[in-house]
Length: 432
Ligand code: GJV
Image 1 (cartoon, rainbow, N blue to C red):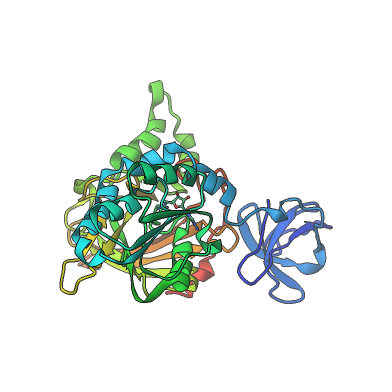
Image 2: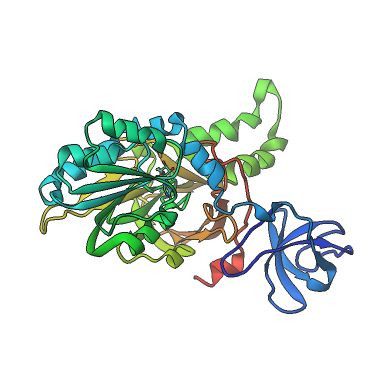
């Protein structure tokens, strides 16, 4: 295991000197633990193999030889390394719904954009900056990009005759000096489940440094959406398979299959509208002008779904919507919706499977909370917890369960690390 700076605390790697069993977190001599919090002089909150618990501090000594302590909690090398490839740039550019949404925003605001200074954070190949220069008449566009793709962006700007207006700045937005403040900060920062990758932090920091008083953020708002759903095909493919493959009974593998396949969210799930068991709702909404970086540590949402038709409840699906407020008063706000009722995007949707399917009747309610807990160590990752209960209108039954997920899996397989940070039940309960 490896670690780095976590919030104001500095997790340090320790080596266990003597065996110690079952005192909160069990560990053995030689185990290397990640210490999150030195709760008291005697008891520390630590993590081992994805599990957290209290450990007696006297049994630990600091592992001074840990080479990994220098590992970057932002994983910038692999993060920007992957965005330097055309594979990812192509994936984003060829996402018509996404790219067209930004083009429409610029087109609809072409008149008020005249003479304005725009910052395009994470411009990639510069497509949004080029839309600005071509479709409106801004005074200047600062196209900021940290990955090596920026070396080509400059050429594209010249080839499209926009060099008078668009200036490319290669580097991390946090470390750059711009010529001055901007009127509009535009960025396509959204990840799976809206926040994964946490590029939003870079956007908020840039806002506080470079956006002039009264300036506009695009997107101006964002929301995370959720719906209870059926996922019969996925369930059958991963669980049903073990029932009688080639006439044999492999059901003994089903619990293993459940923990292997369903203990992580399924990214790139395409939810069919008919598999929604209720009307989707926004569980978390963000105002990009007022949101603080510290708000991102723990976000909480509530939901109550009324089941619209009888069906099998396999899990929850989530996605996001972002809004682009007009620069002109009373003009319509445009929106990019990545949900099942809109044109599919490269994000698709994210499916969280339950331990097992549950039959639902029309009129029953599924209510609960969703928590997004940002990983204190790996800053581009988070844990999603959904705690829910079902109650029928006749109030004949009530069941409750929680599912714990970590979004620390490969995103388009360009983040090779998998870092488990299980959510503590106490954390959930203090929010109830
Ligand atoms: N500074 C400059 N460029 C960045 C930064 C940053 N702090 N963070 C990300 N990028 N919607 N999840 C760039 C990154 O290299 C990539 O080209 C683009 O922004 C991300 C766009 C889509 N990712 C997303």
